[in-house]
Length: 407
Image 1 (cartoon, rainbow, N blue to C red):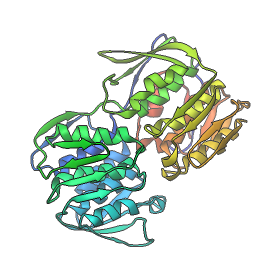
Image 2: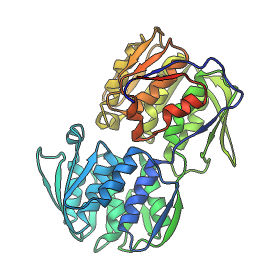
Image 3: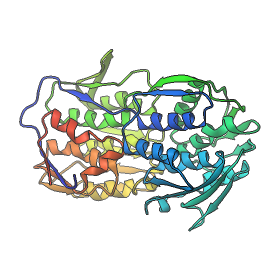
Image 4: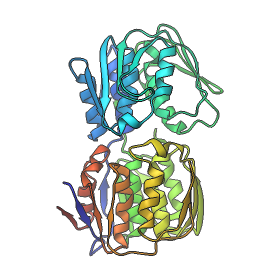
């Protein structure tokens, strides 16, 4: 698709329907569980996101070479899977992936008996992994690590020779993603014991299970923002459930401060208009994937905000804190940033037509798309990047009335 231009709808229907994709976070965890299981795991409504497609290809690859692309979950889950799967596995990815640290996961796996070699720079991909049965043991994680590192260790724990105990640091970032992993493992027959900061898992085979993947709450966040800025009286987002495995379901109460009220029925979530707050203070420690959407929305609504818990945003597909700052300043927004926070001091001042750089980051493209409702049009330099998590994103915008021009 390449470059894409986006402008505001000429008309707003009464209650448009939006279809969001299946959760890639749930899908990728289930694919690893299925690959490790001795009995069949039937996955219903598997995500079609590029990250999930990459993981399927990674697991099915023949020979030693295994490509992770730009997918953090594939690199991290795949490293743990390779460490406990017999054979030689060489894991490599994009240039950006070779800049994303993986040492804490490698160190933990080595403590469990894994044989892993760095092929270029110490602490970073690519890796050469010789798969074997790991011994388990007690691992104290002294750093506040990405939840993907911890999930990778949890998923392979049932394959270890002895009990694996993970002792987490206080105030672990993205804890809901760890809870999601535990719930999915339990659905597949694994007993998980949690006591204070420790998680313990005994050796056991995953058991036969049928598990359906929910709609993706992070994908829904872009349409919450679109609804907040648009003139639709209501909007329905299908496939969302109030009782969700996903920590990002905190989006529903969070968005009340931005004028969006949510009710649920058997068809999904129904959005209606509410009252916008003048200022907010939000900690994204448990839900960092929502940060870009909410910060950009706050800037457009003129909501002053202090946003914290952004530690992991520095090492995503791009440095997301820096990218948000650069792009919002194009619109005249005044803000300051630190290593893990953004302080929004003013709203958008300049609504002329803008070119949005996506930084090879799907969430940058989708987080800025709602601004087309109030600006003179937006041009995205790499529209295809949304395929990482939401391949039909631009189609869904067209379905609710946005003129989309592909060049």
